[in-house]
Image 1: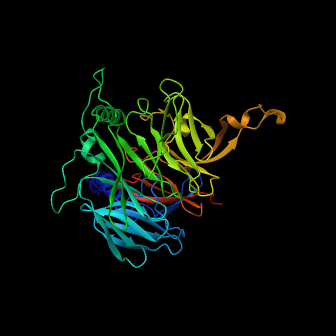
Image 2 (image 1 turned 30 degrees about the vertical axis):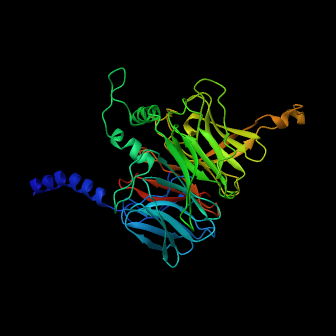
Length: 431
């Protein structure tokens, strides 16, 4: 009998491990370290939310889209129902702000599918290898970039966009060594890859595609690496884009009009190793927000640029609060950050958290203003609150938080339980 019990005890740990690996992540729980409620939105392993600045919500705010290995799904915030609207793996662009349609690419063709009726229409088949990144506010133009010297896509296949075709994916798993002979981290390998890509000076074009006629027009030609393309959420003719590469080497943030006019640099470096990036529009289209470090990896800000006036604002945050991506609520009253691990630019000692930030401006002393204070950068700081403990999350997958339209939840993706799933954390702490 004693031998049987001993054998059972030896087997039990293996059973627990196997059981833990196959067990589904919880659907609803309270984070014991923060007191905030978290729900799992997705049901299929490998599901993901969209990139942090891509609109994933209907204008009415009732539905969110997410991707999975088997298609595009919607999640209804009112009923908690999940429905498949597009079958098969596709490249999601955005949910239209005017219609209730999701725009996506499949085998080189751009489609739009209604999220309620699932009625699908073909927009255009691209005549070249290129990527589509954004849709303008009135849904008349799509925006993309491509390598000018890329070969046409083979018949019946889709062409990879400039990001995939120019970079490849080998850097993610390649064993690269640094000057000291030690293996480079994931973040360092990415830096080397980006530097090599920038040095190639590949001729590129930014272009628009008319959603009604399929007409393609070139907006800008360049040998700079054009990336992170975004249409303004309110101005159908305003584009924001970046010069991609190691951030300390490039003037990253730019805007331009759809007719090619008004090319404007948004941020000018004032010190060596100053970096700015991961830019995004406010929901009303009045502000451009971005990650600013003065210098890189030492002092951290979320900076804002008012498009109409050129006025600027900067909110300071602590090293552990720095995040891969920041975001802002629709009313502009709250910000979020998705944290980061110790290998990233901030080298945070305790940065693996999802954050809620409440911005505060620094007031004038005794109400006494500088004579030209209106022409200077306004400064403030973030009061932070931790929402989710991400200690078990692998940051090679970026969480990409976004506020729901009503501001009550923050949606993110995580591999904290192993497979990637889509989750949402409640902004208000559970009482």
